[in-house]
Length: 114
Image (tube, one colour):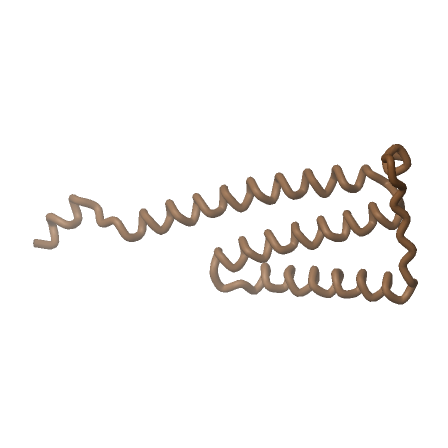
């Protein structure tokens, strides 16, 4: 595989209970982030939770790539990172434009208030 073509072979032997513990913590944090995304009172909370979910999924993919010695999962994690970054930027621009539309009064409405 990909890792075998590298000049150094990276073999990591992890104790089974550390493996279970790492997957458990990542899974619990994923569940909490999904709950935050559903409950989040503001759109910004949902965007941050969605970005966190993408980061946790990337971490799970990288962890799985190391455990299974498969480079494919690293490519998937990289694609998730790029899509997550672009999505976060798009949501930030949307929220910024929405906030600007709420704070700038319409000139016609401002004249009618006098």
